[in-house]
Length: 77
Image 1 (cartoon, rainbow, N blue to C red):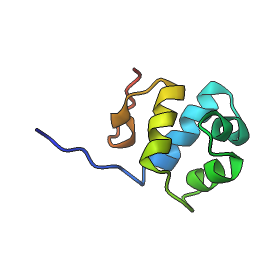
Image 2 (cartoon, one colour):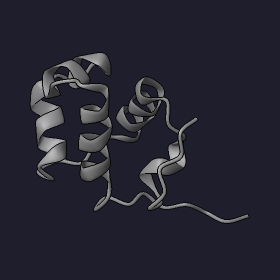
Image 3 (tube, rainbow, N blue to C red):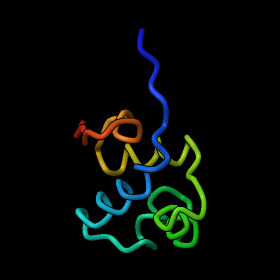
Image 4 (cartoon, one colour):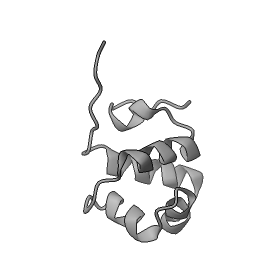
């Protein structure tokens, strides 16, 4: 069984891309997962790293599989 590791370099880019594809502001995206604009902005700017729980919530609202945060491929669920 292969273990996947979070790609913390890729996560900010992926969060921004998915948010923009949905046409949402940082405030809308943050509120959708219960984090708020400040946290979302810091994630996109690489000032903070989202928790695993936040990434699971983001996977749900953006309809992507969890490996999207760990690989270079965008997997739509």
